[in-house]
Structures are given as C-alpha cells and as structure tokens.
Image (cartoon, rainbow over all chains, first blue to last red; front, side, top):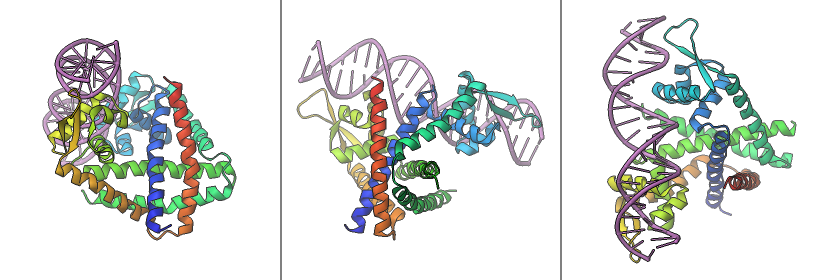
Length: 153
Length: 153
DNA sequence: TATTGTTATACTCTATAACTATA
DNA sequence: TATAGTTATAGAGTATAACAATA
C-alpha cells in the first residue's frame, strides 16, 4: 500500500474517532441534566478549584460575558454558587455545591469507564503501538494549530 | 506499566486528539466565511449531490426546521441555491452554486493537507500500528454509542 | 488607569408544534 | 392520510461594546 493511501485510511479513522468522541462526551453530559458548555465549565472548575469568572473565561477560551451566562445557568440548576472573593471585591468566586462536586467527580469515573470500553483486552503491544503512533500526530496537530492561531492577532 | 495506567495515557491522547481535530475543522471552515454547521451541510451535499432538505436533515441528524435555517444562510451567502424538485412539487433540491462547488472541493484538498501535516515522514510500520490500534477502538466506540442511542426511543 | 463582571444587543444553532401545499 | 418545508416560538451558546464598581 502506498503512503498516500495509508494516510487517507488513518486520517479517516482519526476523523471518525473525533466525531464519535464528541458524541460520546455530549451524551454523558446530558445524562446529568447538563449542556456540553456547562459541563466543560464544571470540568475546568473541578481541575482548578474555586475560580473567578475571568479565570474560567480564559480556561474555556470564551468571552467573560459568556461565562456570566454559563454560571447563571449552573447556579439556577444548583451545580455551583457565586461567593464573594476574599480580597478583591470586584470578583466573584465560582464554587461547587455538594451536588456539583458529586457530578464533577463522576466525570473521572466516566473517563475510567470509557477507557475500559475502548481498550479492554487489548494487548500491551497494540496499546504501545497506538500510543507511539498518536504521540507525533498530536505534536504536529498542536504545532499546526498554534501556528494558525498566531497568524491572526 | 500496568494496563490501567496505559489506558489512562492512551485515552488522554484520544481525548486531546478529538478536541484538537474539532478545533482544526472549525478553523478551516471559518477561513471561507462559513460556520461549522453550514460547512457540514456543504460537506454532505458534496458527498451526495443535489439533495432535498429532508435528506439533508437525516444526514446531519438534525430537525427539518434547522435545515431550513442553514440553507437560508447558505443561499444568502451564495454557496447554494434552491431548485424545484423535478417530480415532487412539495420538495426543493439544494444545489451548489459555482462558488459553493469550488469551496466544497477545497474540503478534499484540506483533508489531504491535514494528512500530510499529521503523517508526513512516519514509517510504514508506525502507521500500520496506528491503523491496527485505532480499528478496534472505533468499533467499540461505535458499538457503545449505538447501544446508548437505542436505549432512549 | 486597568480590571471584573454586568447590561444591551445581535447572530447562530437547535428543538417542538402548528400549518400549507402537495402526494 | 402522510410527507416536505415553512412560520411561530423558545432556549442555549457565542460575540462585541458600553458601563459600574473596584483595584
């Protein structure tokens, strides 16, 4: 098989994988009454602990105004609260409620379950091959994206 | 390395890949003044040739009303036209303009470029490893998704 | 003066339900 | 009666710009 054909085959797999993963993610979020964007915010909050909206806006690469809306929704549905920032009276700290914390922890479990679904019973050799193949692909994709992002300031 | 650790590593790669791919797709679409959803419609139209909105709605897994809006936008920006269906006067055929056709063909080129970015210079062996690793992952993910989809009728 | 978050406004994507014209 | 596409309505996600309170 020629290289260009192999490229097309593997790229097809990568593209399908990307589509299916995003479907899978979306479905898991909906399970808990969350939208994808709100779940993403919860995930970042889980990673960082109580954060200002400014920090969340940067983490999500989204406008501050947008974070206002997402946090509004999460407050209304009982996932997070807005607490006063201890030293900066302009800022608010977004914090988990007990329920929000619980759901966020389930994200970790969901990840483990997904890993089990995808890889259970795969040989160590096959897994290593996958890892070594994906590594350079990711590096190149990261590089390509940061280039094109830098091009438009 | 234990299997569960390997799982976590590879799953991390897969998740990042999925996020980066969707970023890459989004950026390429924007390049031509398109939104992601409209570009997706164009892609399906490119695959199928002139199609009714009903067919597009099913292909995109989206409501007929939504297709009306997407086609409205694409007509307004000169990518497609609505033509009368030759035998069914209820239906309209969505067809490319010359400009739309041209952009849709560029999608194919973009795919080739992306393949080049991701895989150029990779050994045949590494590529084969990647392909053989991704195959079963995709199968399992497809199966998992069709299961959960079937669960909620 | 600069930063945090908000209000104001607008556009895209999405859905369901009711309706028109046709099959 | 069923289907193709529309109007009507609604909600989420996104953005920019102007503004208040605070740093």
